[in-house]
Length: 408
Ligand SMILES: *[C@@H]1O[C@H](CO)[C@@H](O)[C@H](O)[C@H]1NC(C)=O
Ligand SMILES: *[C@@H]1O[C@H](CO)[C@@H](O)[C@H](O)[C@H]1NC(C)=O
Ligand SMILES: *[C@@H]1O[C@H](CO)[C@@H](O)[C@H](O)[C@H]1NC(C)=O
Ligand SMILES: *[C@@H]1O[C@H](CO)[C@@H](O)[C@H](O)[C@H]1NC(C)=O
Image (cartoon, rainbow, N blue to C red; front, side, top):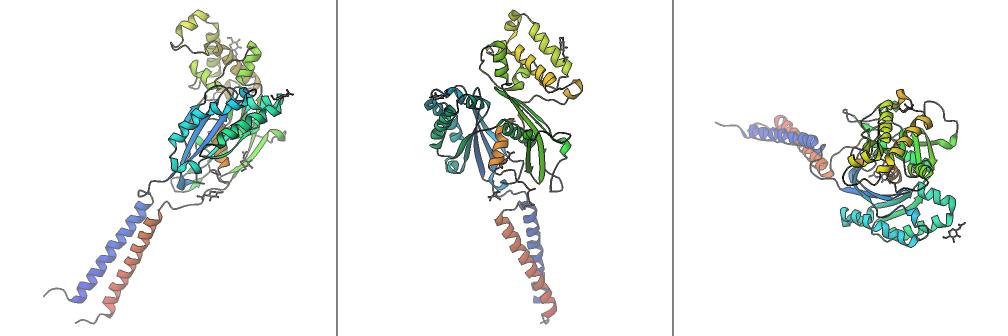
């Protein structure tokens, strides 16, 4: 004789409860790594209209991480043709043309369906700041031509503006600290934590026509015009930021050489050329620059890369200029120098003000720490709930069978 009906039903209900309970558990575990739906990607475009040239950057981030953190990465960097937009002061109609090539590259990268929801910004820096001192109406004309050209693109063009030196410094500071993951971190215990304020890094930026320095000072800031305050991830940050117009590389060289050289950016290129990017000591850096400057030009030319570096003749002057700026200007000494690192990129992203600017304008850095959010998709969550209910029902059924089924 086999099992009675009561025993069979009881076993079946218990089996159902066990299987669906296990399924619910699996869904909860698997669901949190979100293997079911690849996240939708969002894009943003920023034009960096510098003094010597304009660059375009495309950033991307998963849509479901909007207002979260640590997720924005650089998808494209493009150098626009021609020189900076301020050089079109006497011929503003042509400025749009110079931006077209990069814009087309960006539009080809971003799926068509997303064009209308992709924000685009243009920020102009020192070159236009200088022009605005000379002739404000020319600045307005250039911006009008830029707006006219970019406004016709299929993306969500949000405007073109002149950044102050302080903005440029502050956004550069946000960029580098964001990219290095120093503003907020996702801990192993699954919480957003703020790393210590002491780990934040300062930013020194050498542009074509201005130079910025931005850092969290040890004491109070006396001159309030050099102070920038913002709230990121629930923490208030007060940074000292100062921008020196006309102390950019080109400006300094043009004073030295009485001619404007086409520029490329930053400390980085010069120090890269001189092989000084791997944390040299001050005396090493100084010795290398001086050694380079003392070499006969014939020898320099012979040993330079074959593809004829057009800036070869400037490395000595700019190297000496950077050393002087850092040592005499900012007061770095052998002891403090060790902390300086010359970088163009961090984590695959170019370091400059553009990323910080976009993060701010798109609210991608919330003022408060992100709330804990489950990474489960709605479908997985629903299925999990259904299986949990089924488990409960089967268990109750099994109990009912034991209690109320009169043996036949
Ligand atoms: C992100 O924040 C903005 C404003 O702070 C809000 O309008 C938007 O709905 C938020 N997005 C998400 C996905 O929470
Ligand atoms: C500024 O530029 C405009 C347009 O090029 C020109 O008409 C005007 O005379 C200039 N003003 C000054 C003060 O140079
Ligand atoms: C750099 O080297 C030059 C020449 O050797 C020397 O005169 C100068 O004092 C050095 N500067 C620093 C900051 O070490
Ligand atoms: C970021 O943008 C807001 C406006 O959305 C502005 O008030 C704030 O000053 C900006 N932050 C910085 C660092 O400039």
